Length: 147
Image (cartoon, rainbow, N blue to C red; front, side, top):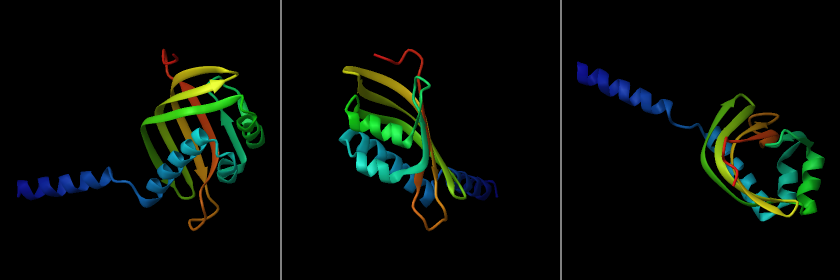
């Protein structure tokens, strides 16, 4: 009897760690967004950012979708590479969040920096059968992580 209960407990605990299809989809989109940022595919980013998109950078500066897209197009802020070390997604109805940590190599104003960041992305969609869009992003530098 103890063995049966143990197996039931083990199986039920494993399903708690599995991701839903929506969570997998949002994590894939998050990764694609980082890839587009590094590749400079600003048109692709423009399409996936919600019209009400806002980004809060590691310095605390806020930018609207238009301001962020303009900044990326200017060439004054470039994502050289993004290496995500960990991330997870939570989906509730038509809202999703991705929380993660990674190493971001950026060039801002001609100066290259490597920064360890913790970030959160908020995604939304009009209905379950509609595509996800990014509503908000926020990044925070981890203590002692800038090189």
